[in-house]
Amino acid sequence: MTAAPGSIHLSEVVGALSFALDITEGQPLGHSLRCCWIGMHVGMQLGLEPEALSDLYYTLLLKDIGCSSNAARLCSLYLADDLAFKADFKSVEEGLPEILRFLLAHTARKSGIVERLQTMINIARNGGEIARELIETRCQRGAEIARSMRFSEDVARGILDLDEHWNGKGQPLGLVGTDIALFSRIALLAQVADVFFIRGGAEAALAEVRSRAGRWFDPQLVAVLESFADDHHFWAALLANDLPQNVIDIEPRTLTRQVDEDYLDDIAAGFAQVVDAKSPFTAGHSDRVALFADLIAEELGYAPERRRWIRRAALLHDIGKLGVSNQVLDKPGKPDDEEWLSIKRHPALGRTILSKIVAFQDMARIAGDHHERLDGKGYPQGLKAAHIDLDTRIVTTADIFDALTADRPYRAAMPVSAAFDIMQRDLDTAIDPRCFAALQRGFARMQSAAA
Image 1 (tube, rainbow, N blue to C red):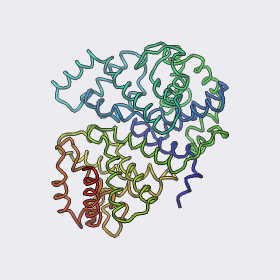
Image 2 (image 1 turned 180 degrees about the vertical axis):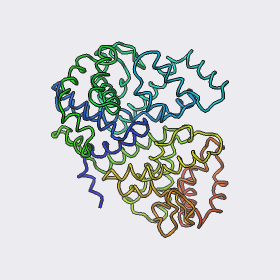
Image 3 (image 1 turned 135 degrees about the vertical axis):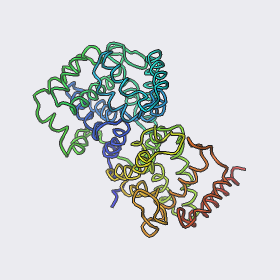
Image 4 (image 1 turned 60 degrees about the horizontal axis):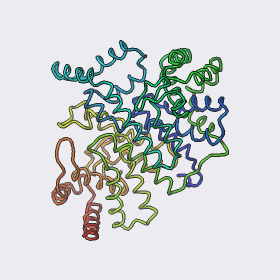
């Protein structure tokens, strides 16, 4: 049974959704939670007031919320798998030789020699501007999404300055020292500490942040983190099974935030923006699927509160796509067998992510089943009609309609009439006839209202 919205804490929802951000960044699950644990201890040791600690808490959980927005551009510039590229780049040690070695190992590996050489030359000539562009896109988009989810300007600024370095050689503005937001300085320190902790434990984490003190990191913050060197509980907690609950518990108690229905809508809409930013071909997809699903539900007589629920489910139905490389999502031709397997995994991943969130658990089945077909030929489980509920059939119908009427890498958008003709042929096999008829009625009504 789903908990009533008024009894749900924001930290529970955002903490669980942070797993989606870890996937998009190619990081081991729990990266955002571990960063929150590390960064909050640094903040508490600094003596920050509860209000500041509360904003720091959400900065740490949401630091990567803009991460999907540069994925397509990264793929096109480096001809690389964005997930693997991002995962490995975070663990590259400082120094030109290490960076060059990384780029040679990750750039255009599946391309011909001429295309690979041209790509490497472009990076060599324009590497600084490329990096600035990618980071600026990510940070600005992340700050915008955080604002849309009702977080403070201090949280937005913390996300915006994440990749600035203490010595002024960071991106995108080259800010120096204390001109960089404190939350950003703490978040970057926590991020690097976690990446190297996962690779080599506490000693590796401390050695890496110590080596970057005064360059990447505020020396005072490095000293604070070093004060935990012998604190076994601090480091052991990062690998403990109860880390999610420990992160919930570390939020300042007097400022614990609860969510109501309106706030859940904003959170769902915010993460839908993260999903749709992954590819230029999915821009606005989740919003449109939510609109079409609502039209269908209204025509089928759903009550207002249930329609609200179906809109929210539609906004989050594709959250598993954050775990699919843009090399696959944006491919202009037909995916090969390995790529198709990657695509077919995204519903199950969406189910896993949403099932971790009390407020969204009952939507997990829609994320997991929206590519199933009534004839049993869908994926990932090959369910048949008897095992596919009406809610899922509504979202599936809306999803198919938007896929047909929007641009895709392999074809241009088709007219509504052509889309309806194609869908008509799939009634009772892929598409529920009731949902299709309701979509037609709802679309006609929408068009009439707009005329």
